[in-house]
Image 1 (cartoon, protein in one colour):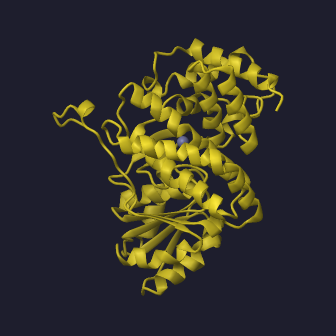
Image 2 (spheres, rainbow, N blue to C red):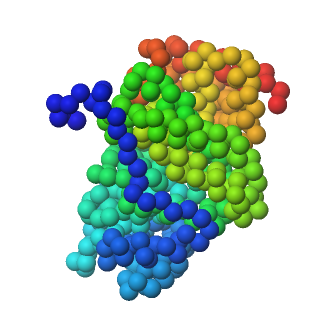
Image 3 (cartoon, helix red, strand yellow):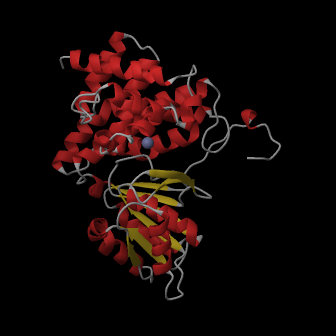
Length: 373
Ligand SMILES: [Zn+2]
């Protein structure tokens, strides 16, 4: 931001404009769209469209609007987004409100389409699998499934609508991933604040962001196990509602308004190895968080608590649990080299070298296999 302002002295805070969460919340879509435009476009893959298209279309029809749909197929690439934008505007009726629906891909793709069209944006997550729904960023992949770039919207979503009756029937692995992604936020934010790093809005973190991060972490520790039980019954309860708010709203606010650190830097390395690249994002950063703790030289008692919690909710505590049969020197080196390319490395209490990452991963591997529970 070249404004002549010293951003190191400016506190910045941003958020989605509106947030609605609860069973049946999808019924609010029509009214919300009507307040923003007239030509809604659903961006979702076929599975997600099957899940909610009819209800969303009815809700829009009740406001006198026709819902159109473009199908997301494959990774979110620039080519896919260009294709969907062309398809959506083919008859000259350019959509003015995009409904980005899904776990991760549909949401990211919808964000990209809304930016290209200059349309308003509603996000309808169908699982609490990551902290993306409330954020102004999304990710492009290249044709070889590799992360190409982190992109930004001109503003956060106009509304995020979280129907917990839908989320309570999502696959367990996705909720576990969301827990991993959200759990990092307090600890990464602390490192970012510790070095007075800038957050995603280009300014210093706020007291608000710190308190939201603390609340996010506390709710996860208190309610994750009960929330997972609610998911296995397929019925949202109070614990599930609190957990969902922590994973979707609080984690999103915490990360954009604080900044990221080591846990997320690890994804740059883990995505270079086929076995760990196949793991869900939240599993990658959940493991990355444990590596961060090793680099922070946490006490054995603290680490034992962390491993216990990770296992209670189903998060990996080692490369073996992430799917690597036998980690060897070249594998550690590949992951460490990848982690060293991450821009968030500067958000850490000391400069790090690849050897530090390798040593931390090796120590964690030993600790994990020596922990009985
Ligand atoms: Zn993340």
